Image (cartoon, rainbow over all chains, first blue to last red; front, side, top):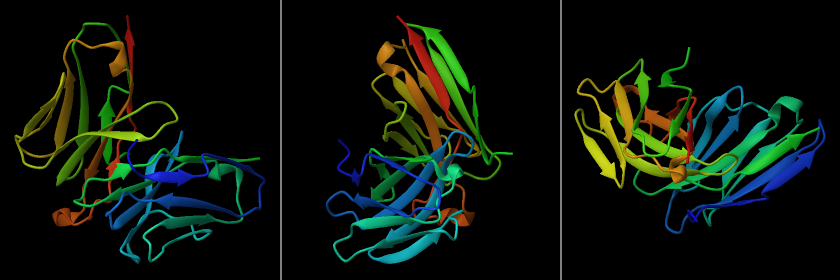
Length: 110
Length: 115
């Protein structure tokens, strides 16, 4: 157990829908990262928050958004879902620059 | 092409054999991270290397970062079935190493160890 929790573990939805993935970082970690892992693209960085503020952005689609709340948990919102959005979505948190990953949320878009 | 290239893409070895996985970057590596992943599960942090020439070991796994800081290798001695999984290298390749932990990952190496 890494100390990073993600819910839900699995999510099955239809194209065009919107979903929210939730992440709770390890106690004391101020940074939260979101990554997407798919067979064709591999593990790709989406976005990073530090103590509530956006710090870095990767190849995150405009249909995707994220935020980090005052209690440091984070949510990744995915809208207008497409078949190609099916992937494992990981959250990671860090205190001293070493990202520790959560178990992931497997999203299936039908 | 990938900014981080891992080789080989897959590896099948007999238990007890040694093996090496390589991670090559087209840019200077300011921090190189090795993770292990069981299929469909989260990544487990193994080691981080920052200085050219640095070498770290944990149990039977040794990782090195070459002097020019553009390649790292992960060596497993006397492999066991428990070593099986996907090994991923992740790196901070931003200019000056200012990515604040945002990592670029290689495609991964799938390791199978036959008992």
